[in-house]
Image 1: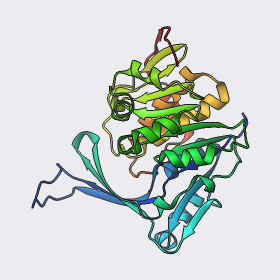
Image 2: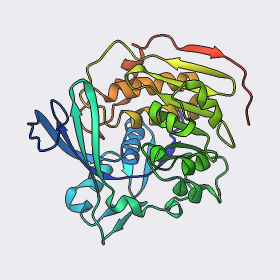
Image 3: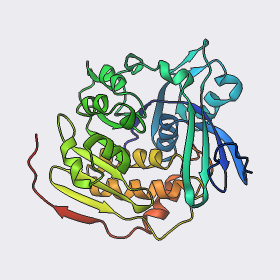
Image 4: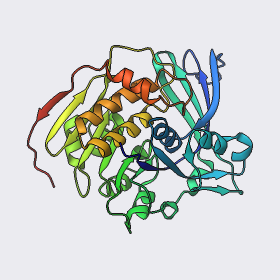
Amino acid sequence: MKRQHHLAVGNINLDVTLVIPRLPGPDDNIFATDSWIGLGGAASNYAIAVSRLGHRSSLVAVAGKDSASLGLIKELENAGVDTSHVKLENSIDTGKVVVLLTPGGYRAMVTIRGANRLLKGSHVPSIGDHVHFASVKGNVVEEALKNQEHPTRTTSYDPGGEAHRDPDSILKAAKLVDTILLNEKELESLTGTPNIESATNLLKGRTSIVVVKHGRGGASIVSRKLIASQDPPPYIKPLDVTGAGDAFDAAFNIIMIEKRDPLEALRWAVAAGTAKIMLKGSSNMPSITEVKNMLNKLPTTKTTNKKYNYN
């Protein structure tokens, strides 16, 4: 198997995770039952996931003046990630996120963008086998791909919360990538409904695959030939759902490049995302062995062959 090289474009954060019995109300004071601090950011998580699955990864991001003292760059390097494309900005702090985990694995987040807001599409080099844009604005994707000098490189875009903040920009940028990866709420922000068949409206321009994540309900894939759904294994109590979508994205892209089989890629992605929720820490990604073990527990993939009218 050829060792792939993935570029992960997006954020680098310090994540502070608190496990709480419920979300606090105004003037409320509750006690956390557990906590942990570590590296986060969707692109950072993706890069580490790629490395853990046996491939090369490079992070394209902007880190702040406190990144060295926080040990974030060193942690990435120890995880096998190339950080030579991480730009240091001494006028601002690194991004930070407070993650609130409630019973059942539900999550809320409070974010300080910090140096992440200085990321530009011009920072993305024309190298690698695949470039993945994670939780970045649509204009970053557009700027990075407007002068594509690497026509054989595949691309994917998981806009994350940006899909809610600026859907028009995301829709414009989405046409430039091969694969779009969303959750149900993001799909609704872009198409007006969480109905999986609405994803066919996103199959425009270069886009040939839309993946919709259903959280603990597995995931679905929509292409010009079929719709397929993959249920997760029997219920597993989540320890930390943060980063599960990034593990999912990494596995999906790796298998698509290796096997050109979207159904197999979907199975691997669900297995990787499920394996991640059993690990504490946003960037604590599952190994290839852990993903394979989870893969064996998945039920059969469900497929529906349909014909649609595409723009």
